[in-house]
Image (cartoon, rainbow, N blue to C red; front, side):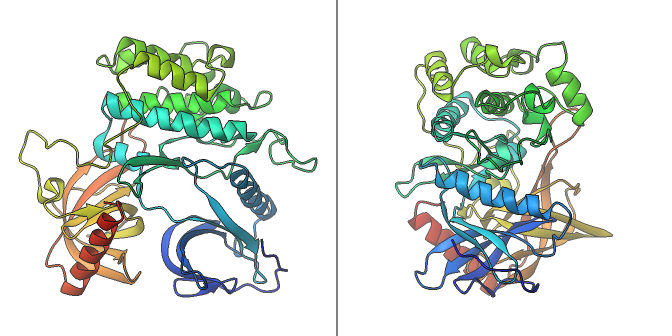
Length: 429
């Protein structure tokens, strides 16, 4: 870990070097307080992901944000499992940048897969669930509770052998079960997490949070994979009344009657309001899943194209061109405004864009994104071919937008083709 004293504020961007070692290559995503870049270590050449807290986030909660980033680093450093993202380095620069360095991963989030497909086949959900149980078991054995298990924090990617594997991400609000005496971050009664996936005891801020909160969140995630909905939807108050109220959660088979009864019972038990009624460990949950689906395995086919729809697919859906996972912010310029989102999938034919905004199909648009090989931001003319709306009656969640390029400039096409070919060679496409 490198350290320093915040002396002055500069603004780092693509092309700059962080802490004398990490050259920032492209923006992977950002929020009000931080940003994640792909970077290259200048001395080893290794490509990494740098999660950085920006100096301009000098709000009253800046100290807590920095403490959470440091705690995320400590939590990840204590866990050694292929299903959990690996932390490599971290520090505080003289310019005031707190940062973590993690392994660079190219894949699709489960959130993105669900936005594009609504729900997943039983066999893939079981395989995903078994892998996640393995990862959570390692997390809990290391004395950590994740506290924010949800589709957006689950990445699906290909290993070097070509097998699909999952990675559990974002331990920014993780709880260390044996915190340092001065660790006040989990003792303030603050409610942190994503309401639709939070256990009732998290929502009510009641008592100590233990691994059974993660069991609940994983149960909600499996519920969504199998049904296309979460048990309780809406704003915080509505979710609080549903998850922590007197009525039980809706049975999974009331939303997805095709799910085998034994498997549905396992998911229903995982999302019990009473933590005493849930599985006591991720290992117990895995055993129950395996018993309910004895022919299942940990293998999934989530990165393969979904079955073709009954109607004639559009060129983007048809995916005639090879594709590869690619994460980058995307801005779609539509008539009268912009739609901001992110891509998780690129080919020379187009992009899959995930966004909270609305964009009507059939529009001619301009799309701005960073090229995968050079990181250069380009603007490309395109058509909106299809839009899949957010799930649930409250229409909350991501929209998936299929973008088809028009008259793609040759240098842009060449960059995308080289990237897709490289990822295919490495088992990434």
